[in-house]
Image (tube, rainbow, N blue to C red; front, side):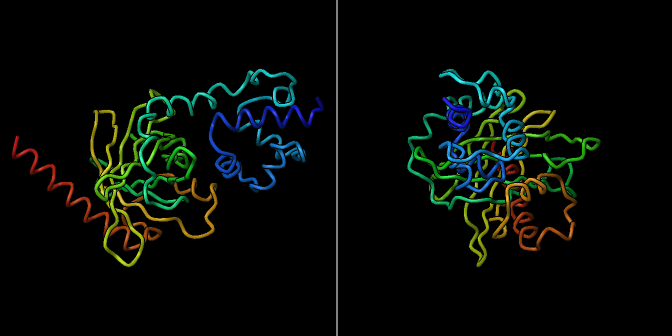
Amino acid sequence: MSLRSNMASNLRRLTSRIGSANFVARELDINRQQYEKYLKGRSMPSTSTLARICAYFEISEEELFAAGETDPVGGTRRAAQAPACETVLRPLFSEPAASIKPGIYFLWMTVPTQSDQIVCAPLFIERSAEGMTFRRVTGSAEPSDRLWWHRVGDHRGVVVERLNWLLFVAVNQRGNQEPSMIRLKWVPLSAAVLGGHATIFTPNGISFAAAVMRPAPSGTTFRQALRQSRKFHRDDPSIDSMTRMVLDQQREELLQIIARDVSSS
C-alpha cells in the first residue's frame, strides 16, 4: 500500500474510535469535505495540518503512515475516551433521540460557595446513528496560574428526554472519570433558553449548581467556543442580561428545592 493509503486506513481507524468524522473534523478545525478526502486517501494534509492531526490523536507521523492492519500504537489516551463513555452509558443509547438540535451551545453554571462567579462550558451536541450525544468542555481556557475547584474536564455522554426535561448524562474522560448529570428544560421566553440544575463535583464532595444553556451565535467555531470555557464574574459585560436573569431565577428555584427537601427530611 502507498503512504496515502496507509494514512487513510489509520486515520479512519483512529477517527472511528473517537466518534464521527464530522465531530473530529470540527475539533481539528478542518473543512468536513477536506477531512473526508483524507479518510478516503484522495488528498494528503499539508505539513501544518499533518502536525495538528498527529497532535490531536497523540501519535507520531511514522505511526500515522505505518502499514498493517493493527491499530497505530500511539493515541492510547485519546482512544480510551470513547469506549469508557460508551460502556458506562450504553443502556441510554437505546432511548429515542432527544428533541434538541445538534450544534454548539454555551452552558452557564453558578459556582458553589462563590456567588459572584459564573462558569461557562461550551457544549457540542451531535446526532449519531445511536442517538443524541454531546461533549462538554470545562476550564480549558483557565490561566494555568488560576486553577479553580472545577478542574479542566472533558465530559462526554448522551442526551435523554424525560417529561419535557433534557438530561445530559456524561462521564468525565479526564481524571477518575466521575459521572455527571445536568437537567434542563426550555424556558418560556421568545429566545431559545434552557434552564435547570447541574450536579457538580467539588473537593468537598457533591454539590449542585443552577444552570442555563443557550445556542452559540451563528458561525461560532470549535476554537472560538473553547475560549469561553472558563470562569466569569457574574457582572461581566460579555454575559447577556437574559442569561444572567434566567440563571438568577434558576438559582432561587434550586435554593427552594434544597430548603423543601431539607425541611421534609
